[in-house]
Figure 1 (cartoon, helix red, strand yellow):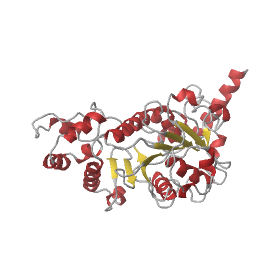
Figure 2 (tube, rainbow, N blue to C red; figure 1 turned 45 degrees about the horizontal axis):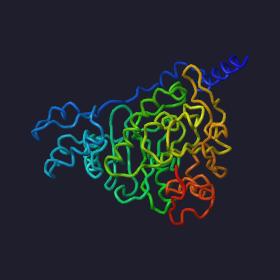
Figure 3 (cartoon, rainbow, N blue to C red; figure 1 turned 180 degrees about the horizontal axis):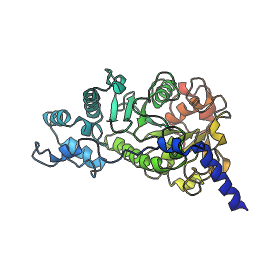
Figure 4 (cartoon, one colour; figure 1 turned 180 degrees about the vertical axis):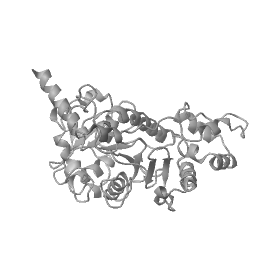
Length: 367
């Protein structure tokens, strides 16, 4: 009887996600962008340095970092001019070099979709024009920041929408900016749209296929930060982004994994994530995500609610947040808690006190 009941729940979940319109759902189906960046074949064939360049498809971020450490400034400049899309997306390459390469790559597209990305002063850490476009942007100084955070978004986010003005706190750019402001600029925050997100409410949202592809890219990205000399970040994973972070948990370099408005993490318990990172979960009372059945059957659904006591995550207060995209709104208890976590404060007292953003940073508890 229990099995029949769970099957009914799974069917309800599928109906909710597909919306009863199979043609519409398939119309929003996305193919994950994976593999090495555009221009990799020309990069591999480049023998201008008299030696092989690291293969974007197989070189580890550590190998990439060691390679660039051996180059002269003129050699580096030559590679940036010839292969901006490759250099800009090589995890492990020097951070400033990636900014320069991606600035060139974005301008070279001559695409109105990316006009805002081409504005002076933007720190684009990754840019991939394939599909709907992917972009990673840094807010703050990665080289000097004591603490770093990465915002991982959910559905309907791509290179053209990740910083849309009309939704200031529902986009990864808006979330990143709000989080950094809540720490009084003491942290660096990265808006990471480094995977193909679901588009609309269809089967992609109900399954883990896109999240599986994104998890590998997120894990490699965090290892690239480490190879480039950046400290381990705290991950803030919104909505479907929580599925990505759950699947990546055992491989990412991260101090904390914070999920908010999560449909699940593809895990039944925190221990199933196989991570040493601290795991946090937030869900406000008005978030519609609560209406999604927390099951995983036959590939549909994403498992247990991370905010459920039985899951074992640390609970982040979110009583003042409103709706599915309100967790980073200034003045909310959730943003105040996120700022404390981003700065390394990890006790219950730290994340609930209203003056945490003004206090000295503490690291009083282990993972």
